[in-house]
Length: 361
Ligand code: NAD
Ligand code: GLY
Image (spheres, rainbow, N blue to C red):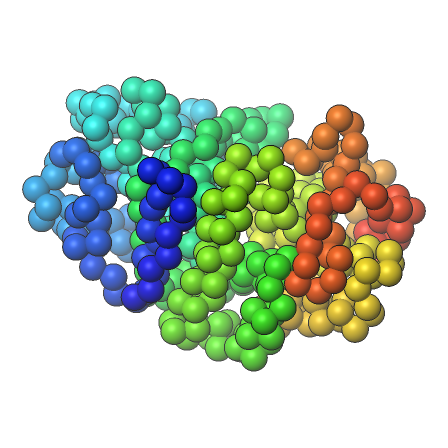
């Protein structure tokens, strides 16, 4: 097992990464009160819920569970309310802990519920998808969707501890594994050439779910995210780099309709568009652009999106959370492995980069 820390002063917390982790011993120091609400969904519950409930009961805690339907379409206020119902029905109080057992949807919802219930109770993340292990479980962003926008209602709520168990990735569908690899590749492209070389050497093993390689990829990804979050918890600056590929990706996701493409798939093509624009601006070479596409393809991710009318694509991009004072800011690559947040880009070149990475209509 490897351990990392997110250094946030008196809110510092560990991320435990390994295989067949023992939840009883690892969670014990981080469950403050006597009450634990495990929030999960109908897919993850039959696989892993009993394991965690038993471990926490052995610690002498009162455990209740809240099992939500599975899917991004349930990441909303109605289903958030089911978590509050469960907490109130169980008679839980202010020193309760909410434990998220699942992917990013469950983590975001359970975390937000823990931030709101009785003005804030304790929170633990047990991410069970690769995407949630390398991204959503770390850094404290939690929330739900609103009919007018994704992740528009939320709170920063850091967990007490994150437990990332590679064994649980064995049941993850292939497409979900690849979606998680998109976020792993993101860390390499935005800040770490050595990690990119490592991914180039090991991508086939990662796709084949070698647990040692997955643990290394999760460790290196979380190390990047932990460092960035420690410097800029509330995204006043550097944290926005974590959105490499996301502004283009959100446009693809929104146009196609949520759930048609997975978030990681849209981010993958979005990163190609960001790299393509960086190349057109003379910041990275054609060879770097090809390298970016190649590693994405080797993770079984798409490098082109379906044909999307340009005006619609641009309109979706304009809704991005990174639009500041009406001005779009993009995460681009100054060089391969070094991303920057920039509003200094040529809009015509951006249009060319979008069109070049779409299927023909
Ligand atoms: P997800 O939570 O929908 O999980 C994907 C699918 O895998 C679901 O069907 C889920 O039930 C299933 N699943 C989960 N673990 C499994 C396992 N071990 N075995 C088999 N099936 C399993 O999707 P995700 O990709 O984990 O997360 C996406 C969500 O995360 C989005 O809502 C996104 O907005 C959010 N997100 C948040 C942050 C953040 O910083 N808070 C960052 C990135 C993404
Ligand atoms: N997923 C981007 C962030 O946590 O900031």
